[in-house]
Length: 222
Image 1: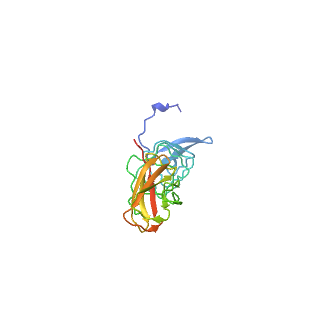
Image 2: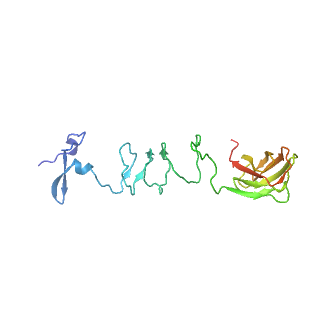
Image 3: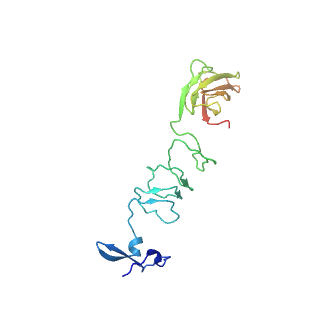
């Protein structure tokens, strides 16, 4: 039998079910079918590039390397041990997620009733002592300040809140949580590490300990 160069063989365009390929196993020439090659093959630690199409939803992958995959909706599986760089997730449904930071170029919105805000543990509370102009310290991004017990007055008073989480560009949201008298509240002199609260009643003179709530909104100048 003469030797035929591979380059001289006709070029196939498809593999049909009835096609076979010859191969040598332990010195014996045998034939291998399309079914044996491509139906339920076992691949050991394959390295895949960009997968253009197909269904791998039922796969259990061990040692597989995916280069810049584009994932749609992931229904199940475990990717908790993955370190993903440059991955593009299209409309993923994310449940309870934790992380250290999130950067978005579009709006971050909530369509549920919980809203967008701080989680448990982000806030704190502090009580003013000595007088209503005595400063307080609370190094939290949100919290409650209980004022010193005194009579309400329409004369404005100011105290300083020392807070290491505050930057000079931040915005402080402030409101009255409790108290019989109603108060006008103003935030002034926001600086790195502190802000001032100026307040006065709208006419009440009740001796009490009202509570003011605050929240720090992180902002930048440019």
